[in-house]
Amino acid sequence: MELHRETDADTWEVEALLDTCFAPGRTALSSYRLRDDVPPARDLCLVARGRAGEVAGSIRFWPVRVGTHDAMLLGPIAIHPTRQGEGLGAYLIQSGLDRASAAGVNRILLVGDAPYYGRFGFRRLAGVTMPPPTNPDRVLGIWDWDGVTGDVTKAAWPGTCPYDTSTPDHLP
Image (cartoon, rainbow, N blue to C red):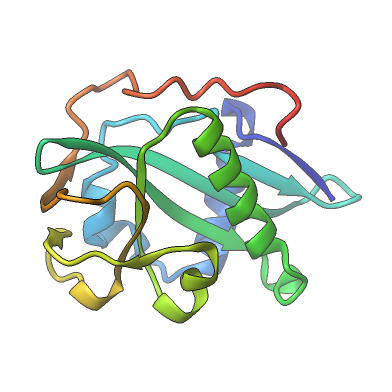
């Protein structure tokens, strides 16, 4: 398995993986409205490729606002169905979190299952509201959420990111 930063050249293969892993209507989800016209934090986004060069998994991060605070929205994360159960998802999540920490990201949120993401340190965020119809029990966060509440909205910096997401080359 080879892990590298997602580049523009990976986009179509990653999108095909997301189409394979998620329902055809995935882009209708409210989290996609937060991503419209906002570029991902490309240096945090990772692609895992198998021995034959195929995309086996990917993870993406997007800048968002929570009330008046900057944050990163983790997702989507996708593992090809033939590679599920190998620990690749956990590896991508931990690698992404390591890169985000090195870049100075203060807080990350996602919409997901608390029992799965809890092992990485994510916890339910009271007072943080994703666009409807998101189940509030699935809004999870990690790191500095003390005193941070409010609606999750689209990033205010189209074309830029509030964090220095260029990470040292020694990180995966």
